[in-house]
Image (cartoon, rainbow, N blue to C red; front, top):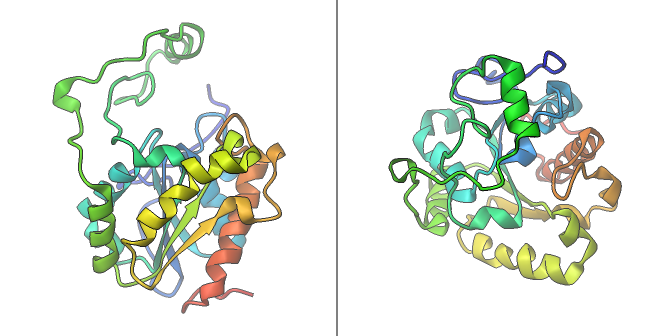
Length: 247
């Protein structure tokens, strides 16, 4: 309703036109709504822009609400030319990312065009929330693939660093047993598919992450994204790759 601004480029990234500068550190930031940020956050509050401002890197966020690991890997497999221009990949993962892939089901959650009039769309989406989730049209159903195989393939093709950050939802952050069974248990499955240049980090291990940084049961608020950006920078900079210019 004209209160926030966002950018999306020709590759659906949450950024301006895709013009990587080969002299700067280029990072592909991949994720679901954790990276996208959602309607409550304006562009400067989202994770990608905050990380870019903090580091001076060129950060290229690619994300969509409800994306699973398979959806994310499919995007990268379909855009190998983009990967050629990247110096590293970051994948933000949560425990819901390792189930079935997401399929398009509704204009209310994933509009295919500019909603018009906006007020009617707003009422339908937030005031008249459907009690029954929309059913996926069989023609739009994404076929199930083995995400572990696809992750292994990415790791073999992309010879540069891949950083995977395991992000806990609010319940997992407060309950270590739940976090271990639902989130951390995925780490061995991921690690088995990655090359030596890949690293896995746990957001919950950082002393700066706390309960006040959640906007709801999973998404970070604007301040949470600021803390996440610092966590990403701190962990990634350990690698001291060329062009990072970490201080």
